[in-house]
Length: 504
Ligand SMILES: Cc1cc2nc3c(=O)[nH]c(=O)nc-3n(C[C@H](O)[C@H](O)[C@H](O)COP(=O)(O)OP(=O)(O)OC[C@H]3O[C@@H](n4cnc5c(N)ncnc54)[C@H](O)[C@@H]3O)c2cc1C
Image 1: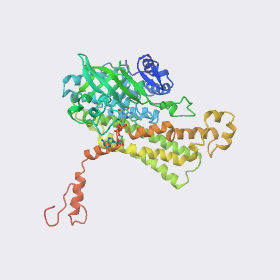
Image 2: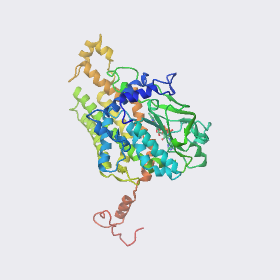
Image 3: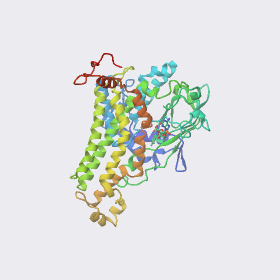
Image 4: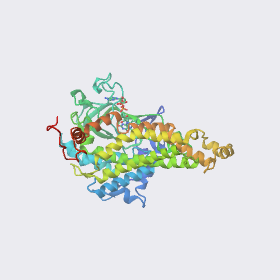
């Protein structure tokens, strides 16, 4: 099947028999019809439909190397600058469609999988069958245009101990046995965003595993369908309250459900295993870094961050215009902050693409550091973007009747008392409800935490950034200057003359 339509996506989801626990209910089918999921499913379906839209299909698809049929562009293994640009345009277009509020559109994990497939020999270093499994799986997902979720984290219980050292050694999902057909997994993994509506779940190694023998049962990388027997998803409370797009413009469209994935002795066929029991390889993020999956995921994520910042720029500009506060200097300063975030992200993408090069697996790959900078910086910047919306919209975020009041008996009050410089009452309420949903609603709260932990714990990401950054040239130059009598520092690459001969 080539790139699928929205209808094909929805039909497959509703027909699939899975185990979803939500609000005390157990759903086994028709997940796409449930109030917690139906709007999200509509949003995802609309993105799949764009793949068939004559105005967008050339940008969103390319001919499959095996069937010649159009398949999703995010599966394209880039071999040239042109390929990379095609991927980039595709990912930005999808991100723009949700203003970046959808974080798990298919292109995110498709990017990881296409890189893992190109680097299949990394998996094959342990056993050739693993390389073949990764390649075959990538083709399967590409040719069926499947939607993936993923889970990397062990449940929070006692973080000062390894998963094996917990009170219950099967709280964190572990290999509990093997049969002729595959491995058996028991325990839980956190946190499968969109798990309930995805086709497949990628279960990849936690970056915090140590390479100790006791970590062996927790070391694996595999993928199974979300309707695999024994697999269930325990959902959080839905933040789509069934309200209109007027009342909850974002929450009524883009609430990507998060769920704990519970493996109740799930059989994972060997052909779905990409590696098992090699903690020395499946640790400290080696899989993501060494296969190139991380950089291609980061490319998608930073494009999404850019789309989100462009949304905030549009939003704050509409607010400042609506209540005519743009003339105040501190307001301009805040708008300038948003512009700067937008420009830094755009520059990071551009630098990463301009400095792209062929990696060891033959993929034309964006430069790492601009994307690494952006993925470390954005989680700490996003709270500031929300704060700027609060500061500019102020009480307007809460002096906000709902659509029922705005269109009902209180309509005249809304028109009279909530009008503003450039908008009548109802349109001003409409705009400020969007600002509220982006910055102060439950949906906005979840988005804030999501962005903060999007790529993992920012503290440990910063540690990794420092560890991986070559600071020696900078240190050398400063040290040379310390011992130099020259009127200026030596040009880069030249060592200054050190007074009195040898340098300490
Ligand atoms: C809304 C949301 C959606 C998510 N969706 C997904 C998903 O789809 N797939 C997925 O795999 N994951 C997902 N995650 C999980 C995300 O990857 C993790 O939140 C992130 O990696 C941090 O891990 P943790 O939540 O277990 O925090 P913990 O590791 O438990 O950290 C809690 C606190 O303790 C500190 N801490 C703990 N251990 C250490 C240590 N060794 N050194 C220093 N500090 C430490 C941390 O800095 C942090 O402040 C999601 C998270 C959120 C919030």
